[in-house]
Length: 210
Image (cartoon, rainbow, N blue to C red):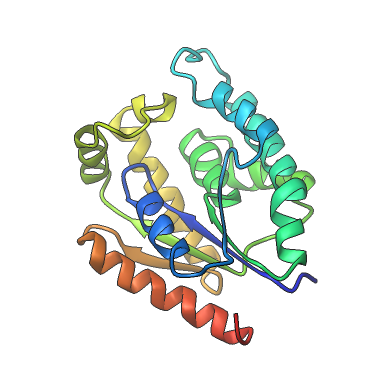
């Protein structure tokens, strides 16, 4: 078992989790901030294929497999070594994204997508997952207002798809209540940050001094 702490941040598009995770990372000098898909060179290359707006013909199963492949490489090359060195790893998305997006919203089945990912992660899961919950309409409005944000293939999906993503996340909160904590992401950045940092600090306090 690693001596570090693995915390993941989840939520629908436009929930603001990337903004918050960057704010949280600044509070801990030695924390490793990373993201999925991506975080290392191979996984970033896979990310570019997955999110390319031109790849509209991508099959849902292909999409799920590509996410799992990127996740595997990221995990063994970056996340696990950092945890073994006792670091706090803050990751923008992990396996729950695949369960909500591909498993539920794409209709592949959460259990089926989890099985694919079990091969990739070998049952390795976060100690804490913070889920930023927001109405899809508000999330999409934020995306459209943020001119500097990367607009990717998933952002182009219709409202119904994003509603299913949220439903999928809600099912995960019910399924893993000891790991996933929901935060209302409709408030101000400062409000959401304060709630988030309390959760992170409480988790780290369980493991002793950082």
